[in-house]
Length: 471
Image (tube, rainbow, N blue to C red; front, side, top):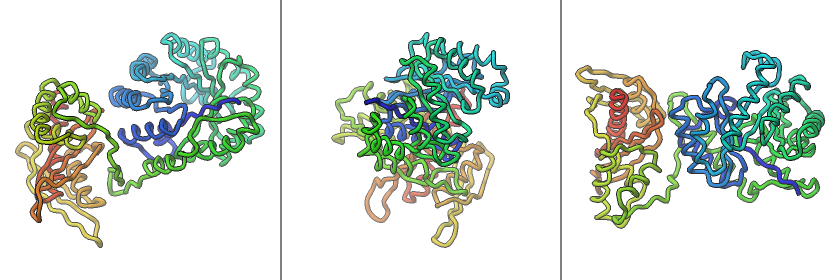
């Protein structure tokens, strides 16, 4: 029986092709789900913003236990190999991808290089990746429209330089299954037996799974699929075909078919979560899946490690303040979980002079009108105001703050809990914002939960503004 590896490209293609954009936190959750399902390879987007994208890849490397993490190189960056490797090297199974167009039209308009220069680039990048001891994949983009002699030269250049996997892509999606089978069989015959052959099919003609199966029958060893999105072969459909046809064709894959439908449903709920035209935030809720639990016996390093898992990059001074506050709380409780630690960090770390101060807010909401917020903030001594419509009172309030500040921040988490009992109970709100790859937490307390949320959001924004000004 021949094992077919499945490489998921949902994260790589989401914003480009399918119109759904995943937040930092959602990408981590997506990778964990795919890893749990037994997907062999999880592909991510190339590094564009070095700080944010590097942090994402490092976070994925610590979160993913069994799957390969594949990072494509950006050909525009002279230091692409070292930048990608520094982000990826802590992964249990790292892979670098040399992605190069091989059709005349894409070489000219995307890379602005002649064929000879493309071949030199392939040799150089593949050799650099192999020198690091990393598994290396050469991806021939738009291979179905390339001149066959040049495609062969490109593949030979990659193989001679040490590529472990050669992947050919029907980017245009114009090939029928029989045509793709013949093309893949010819490529399989031209590369050594120890080199794995991968394929990716466009779903332009809505037959991506048929083309992928034809390629597998022709000798392909690895198939790119997607748990969500209609741009390539669907992970659940392809896995089902391999399961049904596996014994007859002598093939199998390691994706856990019994858990697949539940896992795919969770991924699609996350990826296809509705985002309103009136809001820049996602419109869904998620349960916190954290087994973080600290006790009074945990030392400073354990508390700082737990904070780092939540996404906080604390200075030595803030770390000491958080640990001191943790000790006070832990002395009164059996254990401290993720939500309590969030609140501790929000109240103890990076307390800064407020750039923005709340003056007034008026929120209108109901079941027959859109939620609106009229917000007034002082920036130093200048009174600023805005009016915004949102999906709800909290959403409208946050959008109004952002309109005044002039920046949109990724809302990583929004927590509300009661801190006293009764009709006049105080509500505590913790807001986590992500900016520049870091997490900033704000905390607000009020008998009005909307007011608590507004104060928490302003508190977090002030921390971001202060740190950016200091930098």
